[in-house]
Length: 127
Image (cartoon, rainbow, N blue to C red; front, side, top):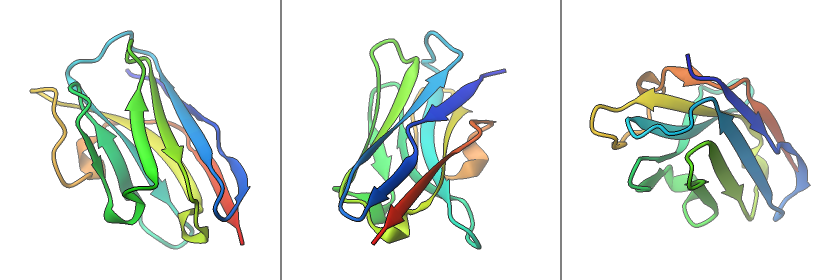
């Protein structure tokens, strides 16, 4: 079982930045798709970004140009750099890992593709 632990959440003013981190229990995971999701109160969980073994990235339209997903060289840590934060970005953010037979991620960024989840880290954006 893959263990995922998020960190880096907190409170920030609109226009500010946060960098979320997610440590994994795997030293290397070529056959996985990794992603970040978020869930605001009263709303369904939303796929935010994903990254595959080739570091090809996907983003939901609402965060394009503001958020960047990345992973370290050893593929033990996943990141989500969030810039120009808006109040509507406030949510519980989760990192996730899913099995990928070819090591690639494909649209859409769907939670059904991810079998392993972190506990979440809260992001609050004040205006």
